[in-house]
Length: 143
Length: 143
Image (cartoon, rainbow over all chains, first blue to last red; front, side, top):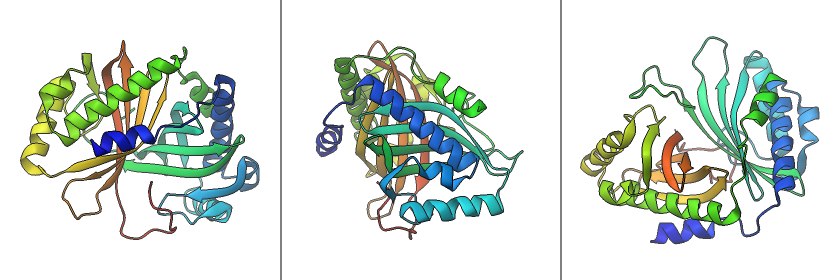
């Protein structure tokens, strides 16, 4: 029951109201488009708050880590494109379910990104990335 | 802008009310505990609806696919344990951010599970799984 107790404790303590949730979704979608697809750090960084705590183990912490990551994408995978399949929000969190393709024509990866916002600004990021397999045990696709 | 339009269209059309969101969270956490940690298909399957559409490429579709997967875990990884780090919900969706360890003492994987519910029952599942790396470019951990 330790897991159950922890899980319930991990719920957002205060629910955001519906307009705030919708605004947070719009902020994250625009940030994602500017950052990951347009690779435009200046435009994307307008949505960042006073910190950008990074949990992706391949990216350095902070806005500078994001800037370096976008520079890497621009140089190595200029045609990379991520399609957002699903946008969800709860409390201060916005979740994106994404199909990311670094090189056109390849299968790409399934990703879930989780962003935390404070006062309408993005302050923290987690993600989980899984390369799309060639074959599947079901015919439903990963999205 | 195609991505932005798609993303906003992918938002739940009708917001669930707060008590329903909380109930959905409890249902999914209990299902997860029974299924993934206790590996008890009979207890877990009480939370399934009229279908269980599976998007994990390693699992077969339907309740039978879940049963087979839990049998596999029980046989190959009887001590496997998943710790739920975060529970979020929006509309018909519940999202779990999980640290899964198949063999005690190993680093395990970061997972995001997404469940869809209809009438309080679980009917669909997606996930993204990433092995935890030995080293990270930041000191924040994956959770």
